[in-house]
Image (cartoon, rainbow, N blue to C red; front, side):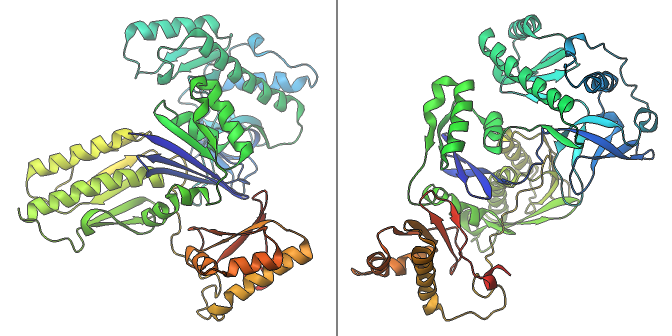
Length: 524
């Protein structure tokens, strides 16, 4: 199996797609203006205590206050609280953490009301992004995650991933980290550290320590509260950190700056793989070039088709996700209804495992498979689902089919489920049902080009339109495109984009920066 990552960087958002054997299996889309991300650390103030929940709400600058439970404060909260006072007492000289004294562990049966006070400053980290009407979820136990190690201030323990089975290797890693880690820091050794040399681990440990020092320096010097003191690496690099494996053949990026960031990161963790990071500067949009746009539009939405006419219906509610399996117009197999139901259900298990990763669906998922009478067929379906989910990085639990033919799955939820709206709003009537004459659309485009070239002075630009419209503009020996080039210069480029709706268009300059050419009526 070959894996490739494609990163589409646009003016307002970044989209990342993971392909396995050219099939889309994971997709992330993030606005470039969103600052709330799992891993971000804030110096914030307690806004409201909730003794009944044994929790509090904390102002981290989001429109909804973040939630912090007493049990999420962490065992070392008292040590953090005292160190925070020592750091803030001297704005010129940073109190070293190596000299900080360990305070008694926070009792597990304690109360939030006796531990925190309204207005108290706390150092917190986001562990779950805002979902639906809920604000972010916080923890007081800070951690800095790297490729091989996770650094935890005030922990002073070294733990090794349980997935490293060799007792000899576990002892080697534990002893090695004990010898290089500074005082008052704990370290978790991740699975990928197996077999790594001390130099590689030491280099990453120093990088993680620098992140802690930078964060605590901000706490010391910046007066404003709440304040972001440590920002998790960008979505592109953060996803790569968790996903990266030697089987990657290519990582394509269509932005030079992001490409340099990704290449720098890959060089740090796997120098021999630096060449797989490639800058894409083709004329065709990057997602169209790798057939991702079409896969996105066919893989999202309420109904998802898979083999031989069968399909899934996926519904999202506040409490859970519900999936119904339908055989559709599929002809009955020669072996009868039972064999047909098993075949449809096995195909559904393959597609559902992909959908869970693709949409990042979390919480409770209930799947209504087609009823099967034979116990061995139900067991085969359960084993197939378990096997398919082995590739999934999120923690999950799968129960065998119940007597009603339902399968229950729980999957770790860290951020809202990814939902791509595949239904297109008409860009010319905006849902009103009446549009201008379609034949005048190219005249409208030409007036925009005239304004762009002769009024604004942009001589080289790229016009992105729907593939059907692009075919119309490019048709014939003396095409409409050729006429525009003769009239307005050869800097006029027409690009076919599958991301565009039928009569939608977008202009980009020579540096691929978006140019807003919409009229006032189009922005309402």
